[in-house]
Image (cartoon, rainbow, N blue to C red; front, side, top):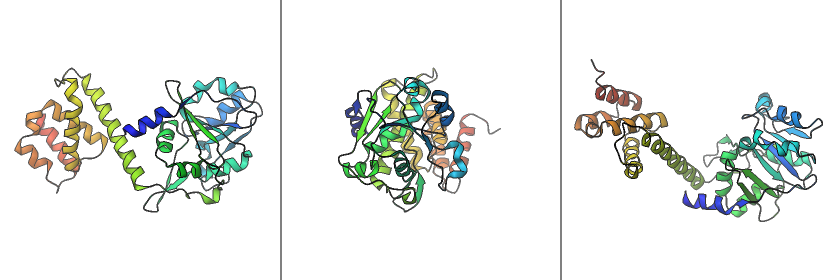
Length: 284
């Protein structure tokens, strides 16, 4: 996680410069009305929904939209409308081949061989994804894209580029890019760390929590490890488990609760509900 964040810091950059015909926005149509926003700022836009003509055409209303930034810069100057749901690309490629290459990236292949959607155009995920790639992987993934930028919530730009030119792929090649086991493990660990940080922020502001802030993160980590060993894994279940552990620390470590917790004949949901009912005196 630290290496990934350090990589993000190293990728901080100045605002992209306009170059005639080479700068594009890729807007996340699932997060905002992409075409509507484009037409609000440009009467005759050059815009291509990526789902058009693909197996995803039935979901056209949520399609990512590739838009060539015009010289008027109207949409660029109103970036508050799209900053959290778009990335910026620079490419000398013609627009249709560029869109086709982006279509090839809509799905990626898991180590198991299964294809899954990859929302690389979501700025919240883009930097994490690109930072996990080797130089060769990033160059191949970018293909005809020379530069890629995301705009963070603090108005800082992150910049990524290829080490060398790689051929563009087509929509028929969708799923050609494969993820490594190490990448998945890294992302899972990052998600776990972010979840723990959210729990720390939540419980540190709770007046009922008597644990000093300096000790809270370590305590939550230990309780989550305890829950995970018992097969309690969803964020909702982990939240309830940690909340009970902070409110009833001695009872949660009692033999009776331990017996309930480790009874694998019952589902995690049932075990957690029974423990909660017992601690809150709801068993009648």
